[in-house]
Image 1 (cartoon, rainbow, N blue to C red):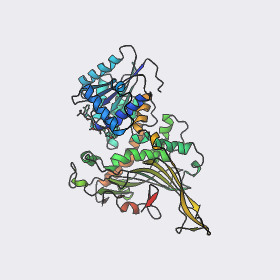
Image 2: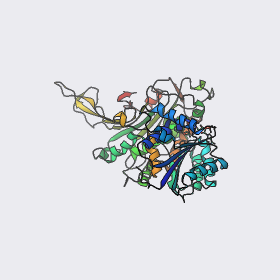
Image 3: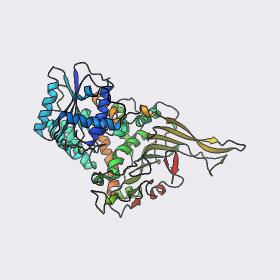
Image 4: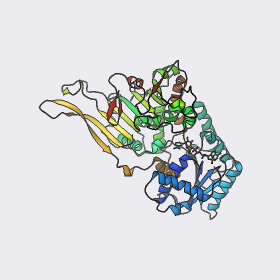
Length: 485
Ligand SMILES: NC(=O)c1ccc[n+]([C@@H]2O[C@H](COP(=O)([O-])OP(=O)(O)OC[C@H]3O[C@@H](n4cnc5c(N)ncnc54)[C@H](OP(=O)(O)O)[C@@H]3O)[C@@H](O)[C@H]2O)c1
């Protein structure tokens, strides 16, 4: 339950309410939060988009989204739906915003506190204009209740545009009102990474350059661009995945233990990691990366026949601090892969000397795999005696998996955090800018074929073979417990 009092009223205003994100993610999350009593008793949901739609048509659209993603039934749907309103208008139009303001203020005519969460489920090109319009209309003023704004990813397309957008944000909002969302941080297994590291003593002493050989962070998608190639072609894997999800995961793996569980302590530690990541020149970025494009991508709608946009990327980063000096962090992501899998793999160094007969020439190094999706859980591979009369060894696994039914969609957790004002799992302005600083040289080097070759790969594979060679000798990409060269 929230800490709101009986006189607190909450209105969630979603801009871009006729879109995919609202239907597939926000509606199911808000409905489930409402149904489980997690929201304040007095709450309303206002959807805003330019399309003409009745309240009922909008409610039906939300219901279809809920049915699509969940087979939990629709208990209490009518009560939830009675709190949903649709306003047809543009988020950058002053008159439309005045109408929205009137609708929301009316809910509070009984003197209740007018708390608002604005969710920008809009094309990124509308973020700045919408914030400016909200500011002009006095709709971010907190004298009658809190005003918080959730901003979707991508936040900028490079360092320059991210800085410009942050300038607009800070011209109308305090940083404490801003919730830059990266839904990866709302995943149960990503949060478990922090519990795993900081609520256990046995791993932390090993979590450094003395024991870790390298770290792999993979976010692989089995789907291709699914008819959104026109959008994807402008972004590519670096902007779409690396700058946000993968660098946030790297920050969580590599950070020092925060002094407290508060948002600032956590975000300070993540920012320190991003600051310590070695920044490449574009030539160095080319040497420390491999890019690929799946066969058939250039034939998709909205993609130029000569497009050099990468649908697969692997990059090598170093965190220049005492803990991680010299340890490579390999980040990779691709579309149209053999499997959907997101995983962090920490490979430890092999023992310095082997006295046993092993299946291979050497003992298999210990491997810790934190599986983010699917099969959310943790695997630890360790060497075990091979049963028999001889003293041989073979790798075995200890595993824990979250029961699937306990895993809720990350938007649920993140929406509730934003409503409650907890910014821990949202990205601060400096983190965003440092992430672009890391990624921009890769973008630059990948734009010229002289610096970086674009490798083709077949759909349904693990990406280009060059990505395996890129890891170096005696290292394999790990996935779902098996290894791939
Ligand atoms: N879909 C996802 O799973 C997902 C995941 C992560 C991040 N995101 C991010 O979330 C944002 C929204 O994505 P989406 O997939 O929902 O896009 P979408 O399907 O294109 O929806 C955006 C909606 O915005 C509305 N819109 C356009 N101009 C508007 C304006 N001036 N005022 C109010 N509404 C306006 C459009 O409806 P009208 O034409 O009716 O106005 C449209 O339905 C994007 O920034 C995207 O990068 C989406």
